[in-house]
Image (tube, rainbow, N blue to C red; front, side):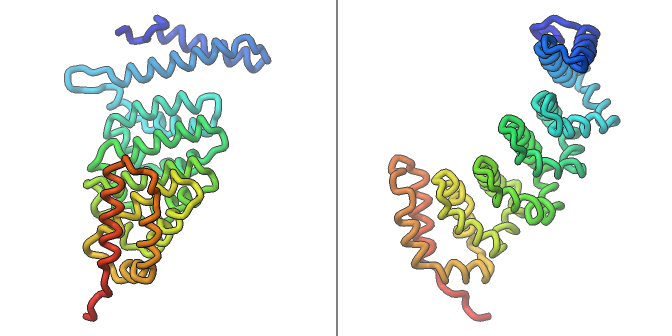
Length: 285
């Protein structure tokens, strides 16, 4: 495949096209908008192709960017500029395929801006930002698990909780689904254990089970089940479940009964009901 993709333009032509397009736009020439957009697409494709270039087992472009981290931070800041946001997102996700570059982005102060980017009012940009956000938190399992363990309070207590309380339905649903995926990933066992030991987190999931949106209810179920299935429940968690024992059994019995063909869901629901029915107070030490 040629380096430049289908356009067959070389880098010099692309740079010239972008420069000329910017100049024309500054003068108010609307005819050049399409040409400028094409230039952005070309630049993105060239960047992504050069990033994949290998010499033997080496990836020289990846090595170069590791020494010029401002390139990554510039791309991350691209979500603040509507005209280039999606192009920057594409380039960031390509960078995230390489663990050294993903680590730089994940451990940077700039990473925490994603909690704002995923809530911007422009739907396409918010969705693209969430895709990049998810990629950074899930692509390289061991590295991501280490990051989440080291930064648990800042990620989950300070920032992630805000996404779960977001007024934006899509943000709430996507964040809840990703949370379930993170907690159920075996690499994140330490993070999962810490999360399901928090009474506040349990209360939040119990409230989200009663959300008006059935989709949010369903995603909340997959997080709630981790609290119930934990064989070593801390006393505060057990106390909350015991106080609500009868109501939870009744609620879950009537919960999403129309999903009769979803065998896994129904098996899990039956298991939770059984577990909750069998709960007993913790013996005095």
